[in-house]
Amino acid sequence: MVDTENIRENKMNLLFSPGQLLPVILICSSGVALAKDEVQMRMVEEPVNMGQWNNNNPPTDELTPKVKPSNFSGPPHLKQLLGKCFEVVENSYKYVLCPFQNVTQHEQSHRWNPYSGILGNWYEWSIENNTFLAMVFKHGDNCGDKSRQVSVTLQCGTRTAIVAVSEPSTCNYAMNLTTPLVCHPHAMLVYPTLTKPLQRKWDDLEGRLYREEVTKQGYNKMLHKIFEEAGLVMDPTIAPKAIENPAPEEQSFGNLETCQGEYNTLLREVERLRKLVNIDQIEDAERPADNIDDPIYDGGNGPSMEYPDEHRDRLPEIDDPFADTF
Image (cartoon, rainbow, N blue to C red; front, side):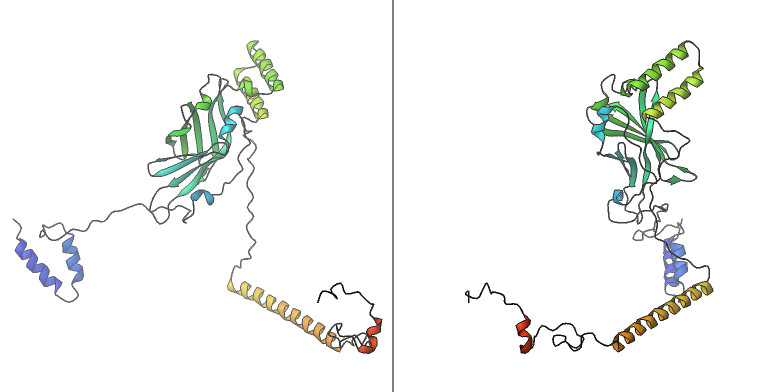
């Protein structure tokens, strides 16, 4: 049985002994049974968030995409989603989907530096068996040696809303978006969205596959080219167009000596310009004034508005329209 009275007496001795604060702290956290009025301290360890945005403005006002989104493509009736955004909060993160624009993630936390980032920019469609399977958003924020990306599957629903978000693998996200725009059985067919010339190309390709004039692998490659022409998928060999954000040019110096040298050069240039300004001022002061004998010239200070009486006859007579007013 623990002698709590001896423990209390020992602690009081330590507490009132000079320089013995540290032993008191150690005893309080040692796990020995304490008096009922004493409270043990509990430390909560929380991982540090190294997010890149820390301000009071909405996160979407600060995020800058690396590339431009692709042009709109796909079923024409989905244009109704252009310019709209849908959001959902899951696991302390808010996900915002702007169809044919981008997908962003914002940490809903009171941390000093909550994370917000771009998960992907609109890139292309995932197509299989003449059907639009999902919208693919690529080239999001960096995630190690790769970029984040999102696959958004469209499902029939009574309203347009994000109903599920997951991360099947690191930095690869999946979303389900319900919308009444895809409830028709033919709403997500690829063939009707193609132009007539591209439809004829596809028809011809189907015939060649039927006659075994092309392998299945060759068929898939040529069909991908047709989809590329339609703008439904991107050529994987061509990099997306980056957004140019030229940073202001700043000169840096490798060491103090180089910096001091540049500083002295600037001082010499300033001194040279000052001398030029002084020379111009001296020349202006020494230059004789023109029309010095003109009675209406005011000593080099510009034309005078006061005309001598003997020269007033030079002025034309002008009727005063207000003469009878006053």
